[in-house]
Image (cartoon, rainbow, N blue to C red; front, side):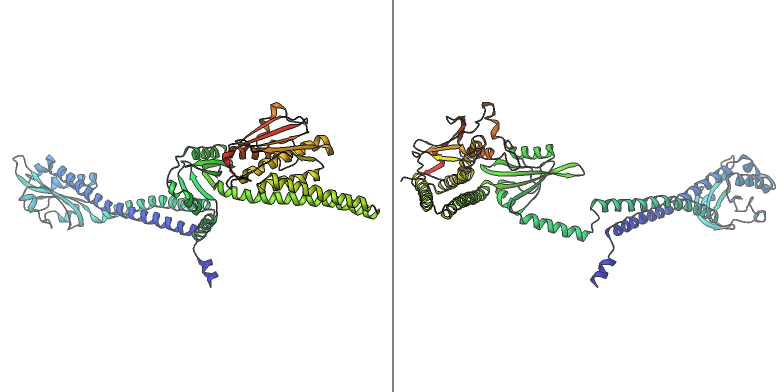
Length: 538
């Protein structure tokens, strides 16, 4: 049953077409009716004035005035009256004396007979009148006016009439013309209604109102469920929508729907998205003393930029995710390196046992245990921050996998512990620099690659020195290497490590220096102020 109701439902296109047609048809009929009514009044008024003009023309005719003095006035007046009637198109022109006796009439049999209608207003009050009345010839629009002689006396009355039947026929002809003309705008209106309805249907992608309502509700629910703050603005930078997260973040900062964005940084990002006609991501935004990460995409409709969509995240949220990812990545790399290294050692030990070289096998096991225990003991005693210690241990295991020697200066010591809000920035710095150093050393020296790491926090800064015996970095390239996308490696997902380092250093107010190492490669010196750390005494 529901299916049949859905099928029988009138579509939006049909509803709009019918509505516009009804409006156009009603308007045309009303205008036609108005014109028809006005036409009746206009024609009746015009014919009355025309009748009065003919009546006065007849009353002022000198021959007719002189004819009143003749013994047989009708012999003179009748021919002249008929000539005037035929010339002017009047249905009758009647001349009567002061007693109302006719001297002329279209029907000669009525000459000498008294007029049917009263002549008192004309003969007694000496005034001209226009009225609608019935006479011998039938209903007519009539005009009567007095006839004056040369002495200034009223000697008779001139009466002219246009029969109503003839007038109505003329009005009917006019009405037919109006109807014919009304058909033209009616046809144009119906055609325009269909075109407008089809265009509107195209603009709304052929959707029905119920479908539009559902899609709007669905999109609104989707937008509200997004955990990132999402704001849309039009070309005038006026906010058109904000999701729940955006209202939570910016409601107290006067960013509401309908307001215009006046913050210079936000305006800059919006203008960039509109001018470039492309999306860009991970832009830093300092808004009301708070740091955010901003993505911006233009809203494009039929190749026209109509506004922009802003997706905003707080740096604290990004930092939390980065910290969790950093820990997972460090643990994963550590496990992978250890697995690779232990697999190689296990194969070697298996081979020695097969060859019954028991002493050599015991020596390798003892050396491995001793070496690993020494590294762990050193990092636990020299590095108090567990995240940095775990990172360095992971890089030691990674160096064995790459067959590169990673030496940590025995005199290095770090008694400082990372502040929780800064911890996720420092580990990627040293992790990326050490990774690049090992890759560079292996690329040039193969299994003779060497990377040295030293660190201290004795002064006001935390200082890390990382050097290798790789190819080094030319002086002209020292600034370019930090650009996002720059890399000397092949393949994808490269070129962001040093960009991350530079970005993290800026957040920590730190510095990085590049120089030539005594080993022959590059030396990176990382300096970070102690005010970014919490000092913990041992």
